[in-house]
Image 1 (cartoon, rainbow, N blue to C red):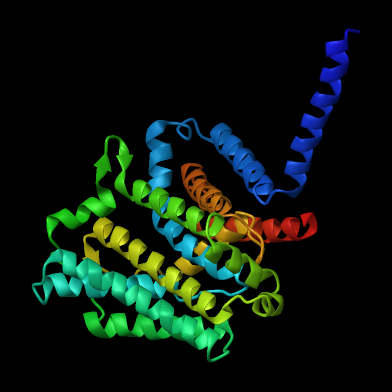
Image 2 (cartoon, one colour; image 1 turned 90 degrees about the vertical axis):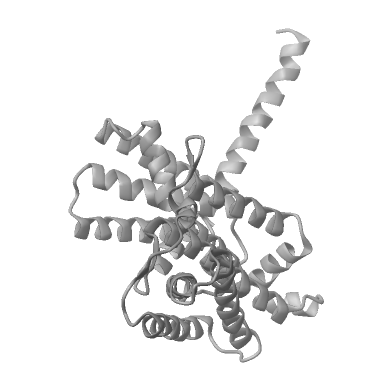
Length: 327
């Protein structure tokens, strides 16, 4: 055996060991394996699964929940939870539509109002959690009811339609062959990745989820960080509202029912620890796509919708259990 071969063998062994270590310890490992396995199964089950149109359709379908899941990731990384995102999204979209249609305001003002509603309610949640020292699950459960009720009161319980035609661009528009909602989702994820991985704020988010007391003693302004992550959750809910409003071309006060659970599922399937402190935003994107593929594949296979809920619930429980044991 040559001298070069003797040198190359240990290098290859180290590379294999490095790949194995990544597979065993990266938060992305399980989500990627799950995505590959589920995609393969769906491809065998349906000939139409791996077509360009179907893949783009899956991404478009997951865009709203995928955007919601970004804010949910920030909150869960700190050890919190936000059950209000679906209702906040509905309220933001309803108010935006109402301002455009009933008040006759410019569409841009309506969309800015949607952002204001989402961020405002998110900061309200964050203030109660951070300064009121109330459990996030109780605060956001209450806010969910408040937001849903306000949306129904504002709209009289009916959808608000008659929006300017250009609003549909956010929901059904395309740039080339790529749906605009998918582009918006990708941009949101890129910004979230930068915030979490390249800023001191991101490090503080992880620190609070890992050990809040230690983070506070280290000088992290834990209350302000908690306020910010709930504000981000409200912001992503408002962005999702704009996309959904453009898709439906109406403000729907009953929209988003159960979306908070889908957003949490995407975060969990993406490998983020439900107790906080560990996870990657890219994993959430994989989790959202995985959830969309499950929905799409089960529909293509003609599975009963009620059975689909059972299957998805079992898969989420399995993901939580495996992730707990893996870590």
